[in-house]
Image 1 (tube, rainbow, N blue to C red):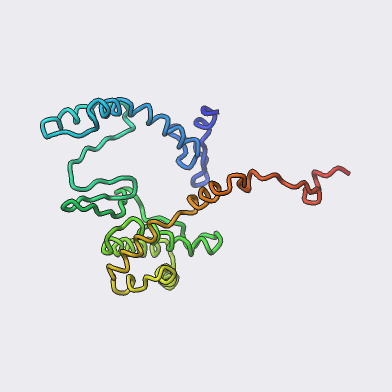
Image 2 (image 1 turned 60 degrees about the vertical axis):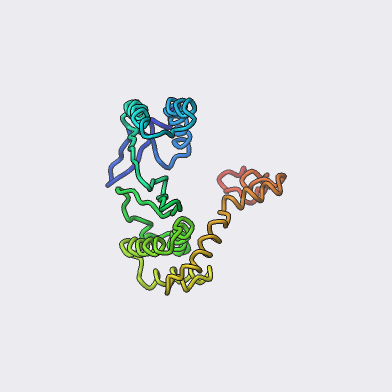
Length: 246
């Protein structure tokens, strides 16, 4: 089954069909599992080193040894690149964590290769999808950005991304106002009120996601099955005529 999935990734582009011969489809659930399995095996040498030395931490005279271990890992797979950085900030997934005089500050990290592409306004999904895109982008920014100025610059970036994907300015303004109005934070929009933003950040940060709400519900009501697993009621009237016997 794994070989079938990996060897039959095909897609269409410019009226031509292509077969992916390297890697796997990023949106596939199987790819995520396989990548986790591979990385688990790949990182075992580093994990053993970490456990042996009580974590990757040392004084200045041991930094060369850490570099040697990372250099060995660098040559295990040409597709996996390791970048070593000594700095007061670090990127982790979509977050930049900065240590400023002992205080951590978080903001959104954008990969250099990331393009400002989102679902174009000219596409034809249900309209609530377009309305949710600015809201969810601002929600993500408010959860991650600790400081109001970082949130402000991220909001400008969201504005530009929406404009580049042909969202009307009036639509953008309306949806941005909707976010601040629903979260009682209009003063952040107009004045960059730091106290109000701090309250907004803390509130949204602790707000459970849709997936977390589902898990909480299932934990409180363990006998209730997800809808997809619930038994279906047989109703022959709902069957397609071509499957009905005459």
